[in-house]
Image (cartoon, rainbow, N blue to C red; front, top):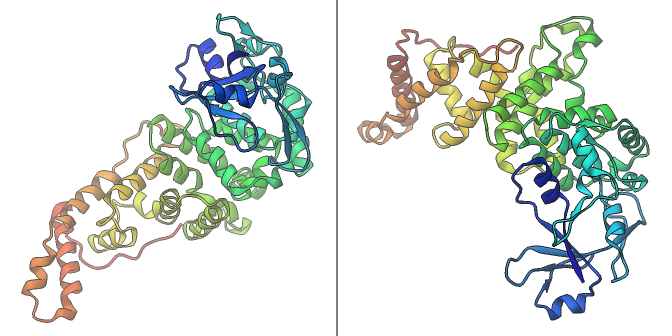
Length: 415
């Protein structure tokens, strides 16, 4: 029995990057032999065991055979006769098909070290086309290693997979899992660039794909294309180290612009409400967790109003807090402001410009929070008028905090 470290840990070691991804493959062993040594079986589809002390996963060397469409359609074979090279041959990319023995020696039958040096993402073999998850994984690695390119022959294989309908068999939960992992990488825009280049974006996120080329289709030329702008916004969120919900909100914030009728361009009248509905549709289809879902819909619907915070009257600002539930969910409101910050700075030449809306709104929110609603309620003889009195006090507090003399309601504009 021989044990090898494989995959990400070896790759990251060669790149000089830290890694928590330690996978082990065991050659020449049986399930019975592993259990006799104290390893605990946990694998459902193929033999995987937990080390008795470290609890790290050890998998028996195995081969796999395609039996049906989609990523579930595989039959696995594991026995002591499966070699290390056969196990490495079933892996997705050459840079992930390198093993290291206990003596430190590297086993690299598919020249992954060469591709690491050349900064190329290349498939191991023709079996790559059998698993549509590999498209998402490769795109995710492109987001992690932003200066790596995709080998032309690998991109060609991914296009074939899309044409053959393999990506259509991906279940929502797996798509979301891979997208979420890609979103938290250092350059998440690369993930979507790769998905778009191979045609998978149009199948998985057609609402996002529709943002690219809006200007060209309508024969008008804004500063940058809406899709390019969205990618810049997303990368702003990554550069600022914002959390996954903020990055996902950045990705979906402008979906409404992809459905603007050509005769309305270059204006996108009503795109925020359209975008909120599309964001809700995407989240339902991909079964997105509620935290990410709620922030994405709020950002799509209200980012325009937040950008115009300097124009909004105190009553409208209080209304914005009510609609976004800012008093009860201040943490989420802060994330909403972060997503809007990325939208503001995600333009050519605007990356470092100051954005005044967040501070103005946070000042107003602090003033609203300082209003003692309980005291107002106790002093009101008519219970039915308590909400009106509380709101009036909040509007007054915002007026004072922002030194804004206006008191008539402002009509929210939609652009």
